[in-house]
Length: 358
Image (tube, rainbow, N blue to C red):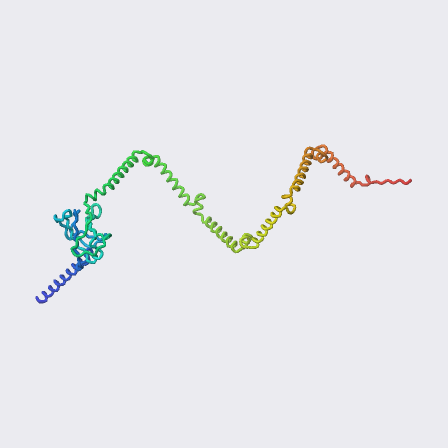
């Protein structure tokens, strides 16, 4: 069995270990508290005086431009400081002293409409040196809860108006007033929509089953195969065109076609220029008035001759217009044909030469 001395020594070691663990735990807790900078961080005390505490309590956070840098350690009322009798003592980390100035401003704000109050410091327009320990800062307004609620009255009024409009809208929909009310409360509309849904289900089922033209387009692989084949052919055609093969390819890449076309255009331009200058038959026709007059006279005479023929004047006109003359000529032609045929069949009958000698 262990002796009494050994037991006491074990108990002493356990007690010392527990005390050391508690000390380490407490130190870690203080070191991990970011608002005060830790247990061993140097602190800076600051004071500010307000007209109203606005619900500010001991331990409330102190922020610099929204970043927590310390806590409120004491809030009390000092009547001799009227009209700002509320003294707020703050403790901040000494590390942020370089970001503070003697002319920095302290104000009491609230985190939302019903949130806790806190002190916010700002150095936006401050230019002075860093504050000393227990320095007094300038203060801004400290809004009360009534002021915060009053500032939100307009928003509340808007929300109330919106709620009333929603109530009126819901009542209108329930009472079948207006188009939306009819749509919501009309059973016939529900039936129509149900039929439409059934029809759509049938159509989509047909499409999925490959029925109809559209269904075949969606499910038949031959359409894709044909489209792919067409694309391949088009690719080959464009490749051949790019390589200058075939007539179209030569049209795109052969410079001789361009040269021939350019020469043809040049020749046409030269011919038009010669015509405009009155050269050649076409030029005289276009530029010589006497030639144009002769051509006009010739056309006029030709028109007169054709007119006479059409009216049956003259031999040619009679031949064209007189039916009997045509019939006699036709009859004569037939008789002549028969005579020639008879002579060929029996030439002795018609070609006998009689000679008499005296």
